[in-house]
Amino acid sequence: MVSISAMREVIMVAKRLDEKNLVNAFEGNVSILRDGYLYITPSGKNKALLTEEMIAVFDAEGQQVGGIVPASSELKMHRAVYEMRDNICGIVHAHPPCLTAYALCAKSFYSEAHAEMLWDHKCIEVVPYGRPGSDNIYIGVKPILDKGRDVMLLANHGALAVGKTVFDAMNKMESVENAAKISILAKLIGEPCALPKEEVQALLAI
Ligand SMILES: [Zn+2]
Image 1 (spheres, rainbow, N blue to C red):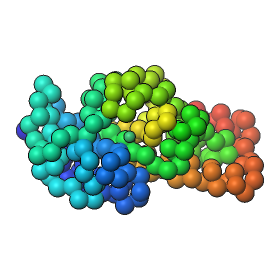
Image 2: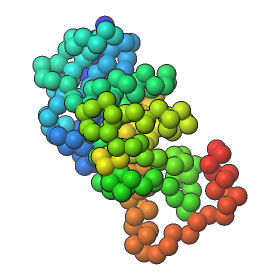
Image 3: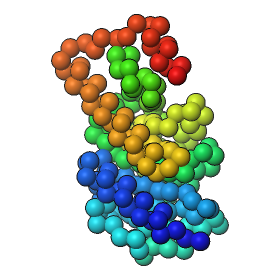
Image 4: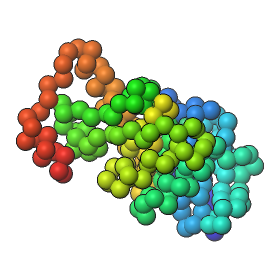
């Protein structure tokens, strides 16, 4: 059965990401997979103004069973990513300014100076470029998911986070964006002080 609470969760997360300037009307999308149904934000609608009837809902056969406006153009990516690992129930694709800046440079975000970042997220790797909305955008996602990573960069585009819930995916996206901002600021001040090698290895192993 279609879940109203899943629709509300998609809206809640989309609004929070919008408030934090991580998405806008034309960029970013949020989805939930629950009981075989996929719930996803619509295409081209302001995330702050979403209502339940705007959330596109698809059944297990891929038929649209809810939503009065077309689904996000990244629906194919969301569908494919849910198939890649069986513990994913929520996906956030956003264009956070600092992570997207790394993505434009096709540079992984990794800091041996930031203990929490090493502990929580290890390294944020780059998925090779694929045109937005096409099947090519998610070809390189699986090898990174297979390493147990939940956040990654989409080259020349933005970032992708997955989680056991959509809130989990949102929290990770916010946390990594904040760490990327700190890293960029630290480099303006000077050279970030790397932790000792043994401590880096210990944090990466947690
Ligand atoms: Zn995008």
